[in-house]
Length: 449
Image 1 (cartoon, one colour):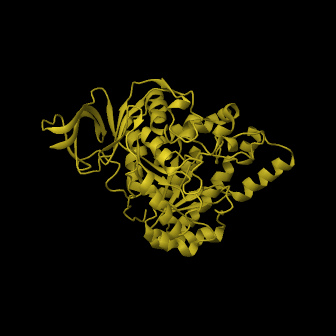
Image 2 (cartoon, one colour):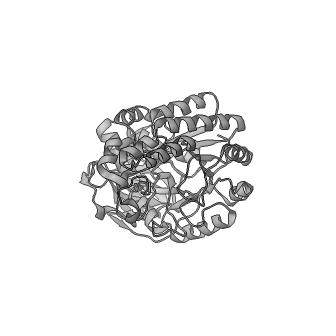
Image 3 (spheres, rainbow, N blue to C red):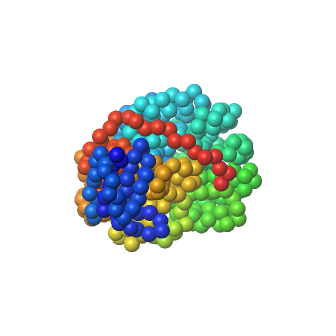
């Protein structure tokens, strides 16, 4: 007897949408057909709902161990599942200790296996202090190495200088492990910040002016040069403008091994929203102009993937009059899919298949998750059931974060996640998390590009 049959769903799978049944057994998809007549332990009627491959978010900060009061694995992974996510990659900073050695990697992995309700991967760090530890991190199972070209905000996770980045990329290329890079020029952003503070400036607009688009473009250009020189597989995180996308797309045509992500906040919010919302919408790179916002939507097909960069902090760190002193980071991991369906599909007629590719298929392919990201027979039963016509206003009570703050509160969503399954386990359904723990670390197929 099959474990579960989902009947009459609209299946979002290439090459086109189709109505059909999906059967699950042993944590995998075992049948897809217009109609499945076999018996199952449980049957769902999904008439009028859409079934997606589970979302894969390759960029989150759940801040455990050490800073679980900022978020934590249990609340963070639960929020991801409530938003249709079935896999996440946790970043190496904001936890304490930071993930710079095999020992700290093992400590975090053990906590993830205990507390995460969905599957996960872990980034290792790349800093001036740990080049000798990169091989051990790769052998422990790190999906890649994360580095900052500008100040990370944490003393214990230092930004890379040019030589460290170049040498780290050479090591990563030898290990066939990607490098994820926060690309902003430290020399430009630091100097502009110092000047603003010296002049007594501390507003949201002053913060925006201290991190111009040029600082991002300069850093991306240097990183692409280093990637071409070393043969490193580069992943540029949270690209905020179409100009950044164009630089990377051009490098791709020249054979540079590089991919890029953007985040929902660069597609949904712009500079005026930072002025209106305050610190809850502060991030780096910062929100951009309405023109950049529109151009990024136009460049959507050229993106490799979309990730949340969920970076929460206690409310006490998001208040005050000095915008430079407030913690920068947006809480959004629960809203990525619903925002893309609302602002992308409903508002801009972005095809559902493209949204699914950006959130599931391409992240899986980019990072070698061969059992994830596909609604196909033989794949893990990582699935998200969505009602595309279930309008609601996002309220704080809907959020599963440790701190129920987000720039998306009050946003009118047009779609609602109804259920999320991880390897066939029903993790989230009808507004409730149904499991505790059970997540497993994913293993990527090492690739050179």
